[in-house]
Amino acid sequence: MVRVEHEMSEKLKEKVDLEFARVAQDMKQKLKITTVAMVVGITTFGSSTAENRYRPFYRCKIARDRKNENHLFEWIDEALTEEIWMVDVKHERVAQGITMFEERVMEKVKSEMVRVEHEMSEKLKEKVDLEFARVAQEMKQKLKIATVAMVVVGAIVRIWTSLTV
Image 1 (cartoon, helix red, strand yellow):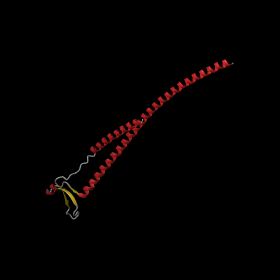
Image 2: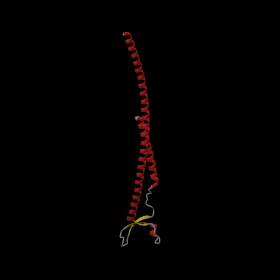
Image 3: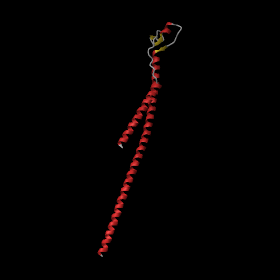
Image 4: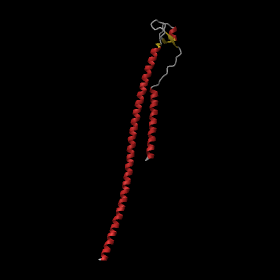
C-alpha cells in the first residue's frame, strides 16, 4: 500500500514538473523581453534651452547633424518612466501567468488526488471483500465442524443413556 502511494506521488510529481516546464516555456515565448541595447548613433545630450536647462535627453546623431530630421528624440526621465511602466505591465502579465499556472497545477493536483483516492478506495474495497469472503468461508468450515461434533456428542449421549437405563 505504501509502495503504491509512493509510486502515485512520484507520477504526480513528474506530471507537475512537466506542466511547470511547459508553462515556463510558454511564458518565455509570450513575454519575449527584448533588451534595448545601446544602438550605434544614439547619444545622450543635455538640454541648453532655458525651459529645460541641463535636462538630459536621447537623440540620434543623424538627426543632430541633419537639421531637417527630428527622429528619436526623448527626454531620459520620460524614457525611464516609460520603461518602468512597460516593466510593470510585463511584471503583471508574469504574475497573472504564475497565478494561472498555480490554479492549473492545483486543479491537476486535486483531480489527481481524487483519482488516486478513488483508485485506492477501490483497491481497499476489493481487499476487504476478499478478506470478508475468506473469513466467511473459514466460519462456514468451523460451523460444519461444530455441527458434526454436536451430532457425534448427541449420538454418544443417546448410546450411553440407552446402555445405562
